[in-house]
Length: 189
Picture 1 (tube, rainbow, N blue to C red):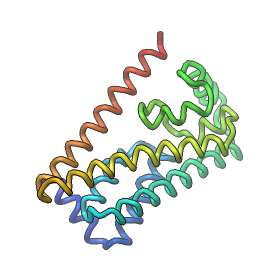
Picture 2 (picture 1 turned 60 degrees about the vertical axis):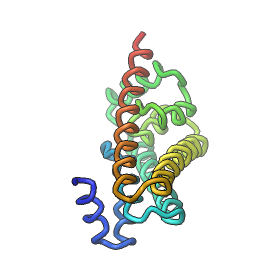
Picture 3 (picture 1 turned 90 degrees about the horizontal axis):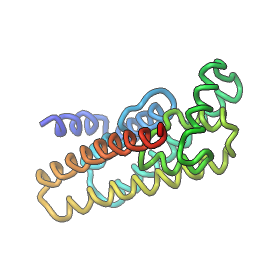
Picture 4 (picture 1 turned 180 degrees about the horizontal axis):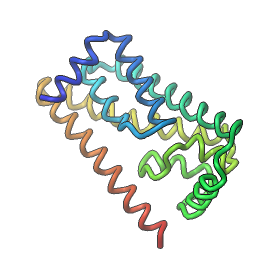
């Protein structure tokens, strides 16, 4: 099964390697391009499905989100963006349900706002409030995902629990895509 191969790949680096992997996955997702970090969070969690491991993974993920968004914010603040991209970003922000930092909370449920660090800089949103919303939203989402996965491991045998976790991953990805699509359609009206 592909899931077992992914787990074995990350396991081969040891716990420190897995933590470094999850940090880079979330940091890259925050700065460069989407990487489905929740998928990797749950895959790496399933390598050692314990309460402590889940807490450590959540903390590392939050650290990476903070790092990635802050780095992108600083780069855009210092060097700017081409004016046509900045105009598009402002226009896009203007048609959202929330036109300020609150959009960053909604974005955890229905991801419609990529490169949030850049949006914070371009829209001149309050940096501290924005980062707080990003971290609180991330903490809530990742905690629920880890808690559900942990529940599967306490309820089922390891193999069945892994399958249930992969179903949770698929549901998370599909629901994110559907909610993003619905949110975009509502914003276009």
